[in-house]
Structures are given as C-alpha cells and as structure tokens.
Image (cartoon, rainbow, N blue to C red; front, top):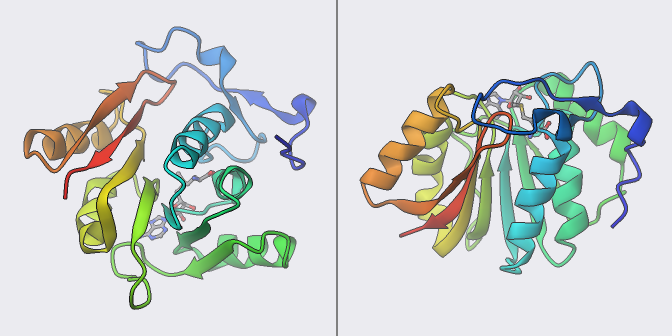
Length: 194
Ligand SMILES: C[S@@+](CC[C@H](N)C(=O)[O-])C[C@H]1O[C@@H](n2cnc3c(N)ncnc32)[C@H](O)[C@@H]1O
C-alpha cells in the first residue's frame, strides 16, 4: 500500500483519550494541526474492512483534510468514494490540492444530515465521522440509501464519547450489529441490518 501523503516523521502519536485503549501511543494523527483528524491506523482499519466487501459506492461523512478519504480511495479502487464536508474551506482546500488525483473520488460540499445521493446510488459501506453528537442521526438519514447488509463504521465510540452511547442505542433497536474496538477514541465496525 502507498500513502504518499504521510511521512513517518510527520505523524503525531495520539494521546490517551479512552482509558480502555491499551496502546494509545501506537496510533497516530497525520499532522500537528489536525487534532480533529481520524487516527491513520483507524482509517486503515475501516478502509480495509470495507475493501473486504468490494462495494460499488462508499459513503464518508466529514471529509475534513481528507486523510481517511484518501485511504478509502487507496484501498477501494473499485469503488466510488462519496465524501461530504459542510465546511467550505476544508472542502475547497482538499479539492484544489487533489485535482484529479483520485478518479474514484466524489467530494461533496454539503450537510451530511440533508444531502442525498443521485437516483439509483446505494452505499455498500459507510463511515460516519462528521459531528460527534450526530453520527447516529447521519446513519438514520442514510438508511434508505444503504444496501441491505451494508458495512457501517462509526468513529469516537468509546464510553467517553456521545457517539458510543448513540451507537449502542442503534444496536439495542436491532438496526445495526457489530463490535467496538478500543482504539484511543473507539471505533465501531459492523453491519446495517436493513
Ligand atoms: C472529526 S472530522 C472528520 C475527520 C476525517 N474523517 C479525517 O480523516 O480526518 C469532522 C468533520 O466533519 C465536518 N462536519 C461537521 N458537521 C458536518 C455535517 N453536518 N455535514 C458534513 N460535514 C460535517 C467538520 O467540518 C469536520 O471537518
């Protein structure tokens, strides 16, 4: 695998946020100014898990600086990656930086709680990573646009983040199933039961 944007020397070890994570120092942020970014190792975990399903369309909410986005593109060359970002500056910066670098990438400027895909597009996998308080809501919004048994992943699902509580509610309601992995912030990986 090639992640050309990352040099080992630029990576910043993630601090301990989730006390249940045994090795927080083994997870890394892509740069000092990207505290909101997903840890590289978590992005790789989600992207390779999705690659196992070989979906045609993948959804990501919360593009931010595009670190997970590019890892998703790299691991899922067969798929179109649809990534939504509400902040115009983040969206434009990445769009300008990438140009046509990833032919399988669809960058969208919009609100993940309102945007819907074009007619006939169903997502075979989705990573919910926009506002930490609203990720379960994002899942509910996109339910009609998920394939049956689509793979779903949620970031920040440790007991110390609101997403963890909201995702456990979705599990109790029988909407999704999966496992929670105790990374520095927690990541849930599973299946949509629609
Ligand atoms: C935690 S960051 C995502 C990190 C990203 N996955 C990465 O690899 O670095 C959350 C991003 O979601 C964006 N965001 C917040 N609310 C949103 C919404 N309603 N729709 C789309 N994007 C949103 C924020 O501007 C921010 O860039």
